[in-house]
Amino acid sequence: MRRIDMHTHTTASDGRHRPAEVVRMARDAGLSAVAITDHDTVAGLAEAMRAGEQYGIRVVPGVEISASAEGKDIHILGYGFAPDDPVLLERLISQRAVRSRRNEAIIARLNELGLSLTLKEVERAAAASPRADGSIGRPHMAEALVLKGYATDIRDAFDRYLAEGAAAYVQPDRIGPLEAVRWIHDAGGAAVVAHPGLYRNDRLVQELLDGGADGLEAYHSDHDEETERHYAALAKSRGVPATGGSDFHGAREGAVFHGPVGSRSVDLAVLDELLSVKRHPRLTRQPGQPKP
Image (tube, rainbow, N blue to C red; front, side, top):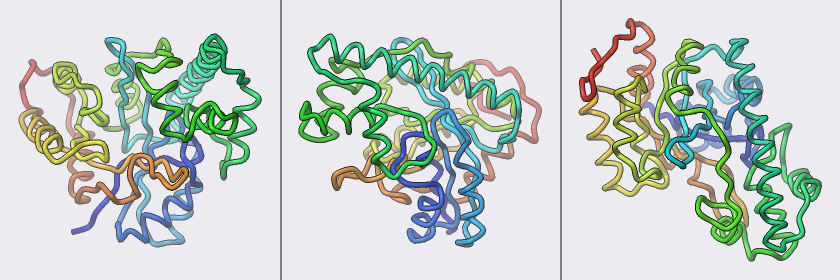
């Protein structure tokens, strides 16, 4: 079978490795294709596409749009859209502005907790990483916290301060996930609900599928086998493809976040099925009704 990892990140957002390096890793992992799905940006796609030609591997343009619902971060993956769509690019710029405001709020919360940390220090920590022109994110804050002795390692920094529910976690005012789905559709793409097992809210996941999402990421590095079977069955019941990817962000201190490139993959036929929805008119469906 020809395999694709449909979820990877690069230095264009909060990954540790440049786009070309991620593509090389995909080739070395024996994949036929890899999707670059950076957070709220397509800045890494040009380099990745050139690397795909160099290494003889198909590179699929993607994006992971940050949204929120019911007090939780919800992520929507997009594939098959026009990467140069001017409306989408403008919308992604607005998303990155939200990320910047969130960063400032996290720094303020850390200061309130008695941790002396500035955004300049976080930027210096990010600059010490093998980054390109990516945006500042929580992994870089975690690195700065470790450098200053406030955490023993990256995982400790997230568990104590940065993860959802931790002391300095901030829930920004983001768009809703169905709006993110609409953004991807408006740019000609197909939208997938990312890592549903992390939300612990199947009702919401079903509402997103019934509301227009075109696929469900059943196979993910943070899903165990039972969870993967559950969401593969849910995708089948809604008549949408069950996609999969590693959600690779890179290695920090010997630990890979969330999994190595290729550790989760699906047959390329899954991507073809997902993208085929663009050839059909979108119909209004009743909850629970499979797609035509």
